[in-house]
Image (tube, rainbow, N blue to C red):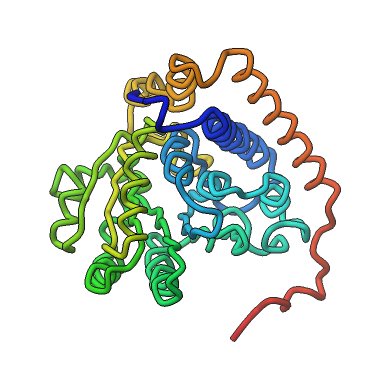
Length: 324
């Protein structure tokens, strides 16, 4: 992992490591709760991909926007989502972000710039493009980062929206997280071009492919893409080369990939790689790193207490917050 001390402060390094640990421990707990029957519906975890969301969100302003995917827990946490409200939402509690009605795939926090995870593949692309148009019209320097996967990369909505964003020079970063599988379909079977970022030339925008297991590489790529958008120069396509350690969803048998493949990617663990890099450059030490992980575990325990103590939604609120 290439890193220069001037590129990141100690405070930023601590924040990034903390958020990666938040994602890892939150998702590990989610698997446990799902297997115990406490979380219902399909659930998709972000374990292994932490560097992509955290690296990208580390250069965003508080008022910038993101849109997430069905695998959106990591994106939300990276943008500043609260573990207690997220856990309450997953457990269907009225104190959750969406009053227990959104669940795993539809967490949103508009005040934090999180315009929603989405159960539809590529469903956030149009929302992100619209948010970028709004930011341009208001002229306040905001941008939107649109997270989507390699499966979403072949959705028609991307081509319609990216074309318009390029014409209108909208401040949006289309960030494709290429984790190699759309459900069980390998990317090599769904996309002829090997370098997904090469498609950017058809849209008339820059395309960048980066190591998605390297938080600093993602941070640098998104920094330049974000600055381009803020200057009024238009959108950028960033493709992060990453990997999910768990199945497409909790309970996925993963017969479509071998154990050796998973183990090879686990050897590139993004949290450990980042910890080593910032420690090597004097931004962190082992004692502080261990303390950060312990703090996150305590934070998660408190989030569980909050969620378990929260009430279920009352039956007579079933039709509240429904719009026609």
